[in-house]
Amino acid sequence: MTVELTQDILHEAGIGNFFRPSQLEPLGIPYHRLRQLVADDTVERISWGLYRLTEAELTERYSMASVCARVPNAIVCLLSALQVHEIGTQIPRQVWIAIPHKAKAPALTGMGVRLVRFSAAALTYGIQTTSFEEVPTRITSPARTIVDCFRFQRLVGREAAVEALREALDDRKVTIAELMRTLEVLPSRRLSAIMETGVL
Image (cartoon, rainbow, N blue to C red; front, side):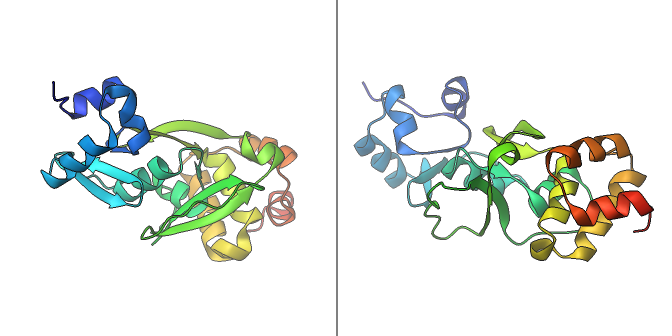
């Protein structure tokens, strides 16, 4: 019997609109069947080892969903996290993700990705779970994202970090207390100086 592949089947199995061949095998869809689905235009090959249903509606989180499906342990961070939390005006051209410090860098041919590395408490503190196009992933919280922008200021730029801080406080997306708690775990001299003086 030929096994069909639909969004309902994927979602019931906890798989998002993007998937890897290994995720389909437990559903009774071996690799040769996946190739047939691609040939029939039921499934679209996005990049090496990553596929999506052709019928799945594209959203503004398409790029993030595809990257998170390809790197399931990634943490969406910095400018991409700001965009998701609707803080600031940055529109990143790449998807910013973090992986463990000693992890092997994933092969992401054809995907616009900016990779940073987290270690120790940075891998767990202020990390939230979410999903993009039904693809489960993790993302830094608003307060954690602001602190990270100052910790990685050389990558994102001072202007982007300060703008994010101002807007997050003005729009009450973060509180001073949340920022201070985060700084206790993940220190940033630049942000601490701002918090002490109150000068942006």
